[in-house]
Length: 216
Ligand code: SF4
Image (cartoon, rainbow, N blue to C red):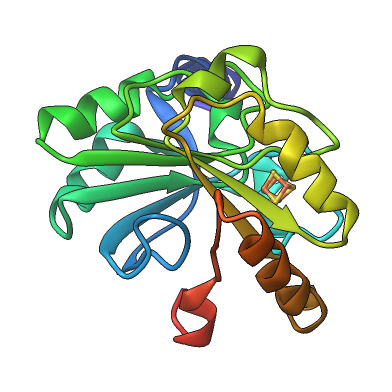
């Protein structure tokens, strides 16, 4: 039966390409720690695969999609629906893959579906909430800016404030603007962000509150 293995492998690859399967790194029920929905319970689905290459990335294990098992999206949907009415799809960069199948399945279950994305790849899927977090290394594609509900800019150094302003010019007028200190730089950057937000109140502060709560 060994001859079947390449065929099976090819079948899996095709299913991943179509979004019927996705490289699942982890899934867990927790509290959303960041941005507009912070403090709310949600089921997180972390999809493997990202080539954006942020040097401060805190989920570098997600980058290589091949390390994460291709998983039927129907199984992910089934798991999520047991825990929460809200699902946050994150990564990695989830838009590396076609999200249509996953979000269709989640919507059929009546779930609210949120995404956290750098926007570097084509926006697929149907989303109730889009958190766009642009990265200098690989900028978002043009189409996603006007669709984002929140813009979350990670601040590692002062130049990121300049970058944040540049990105804020591209989103729609209702998009909520957040500055969030990169975790390892929080002690240095929080005072700078606080001063900046008081001087430029169109911005709000976002903190990774789940890390303070010691939850995933
Ligand atoms: S886009 Fe996200 S997952 Fe990808 S390298 Fe940057 S922080 Fe990490």
